Image 1: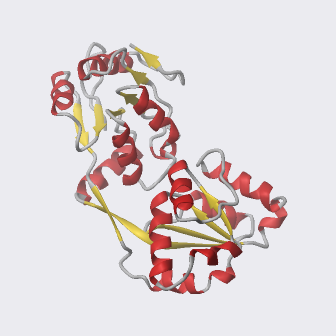
Image 2: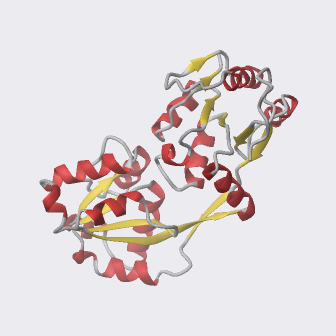
Length: 280
């Protein structure tokens, strides 16, 4: 249960999620305003525990119609394994390739992989509609086989949408994200699920990318829905928006003190739900 937040003049009882490399001054200022600052844990990106399923999939690529790359990491690890097994990039020419996100597109283009479709946004619904239209309508999806290289985590909404349409979908573990502090990640997931985090503070563009890596997504809106998003500056805001975040708070000047003042003012306003960025 959240602590009492009746003190509207401060951050009393508020829980703020920040990057592990966030400036110490930010932590000091948040604590001075009686907020609870929590660092999300560092993570590592590693090979899957076993290559067996991935290798079998690569050897049977002819059984798929579409190859969907949802992140640049999925593309990087899949292509590396493809070549480690002695295959050529050109062998992917027989498949339709969908690239989700600018970083994914850049990774595939650098590897000379042809791209058939780039959805306008990474949300599952947008990707589904783009492929549905490309394939010739909803009925056509039922005849298609999709391969989605992914992290070694549970199935996502996109794969479920295609399966509901009658398609065959294989989500294959291509890499895995390893938390350097598993209990901390469990705590953060529990807080997010229970509405226990009031705001995420992003001090630079790199912190946005690291947060997306933590949750293995290009669409942070699903994970952070209902959580206020504060960004230090315009560059950070733009990167956050690329990850589908609605930025609520940006200070009038890019400093820690201004950022915390803006955060304090925003969270003191009860029921604030404007989708417009508030500058202070």
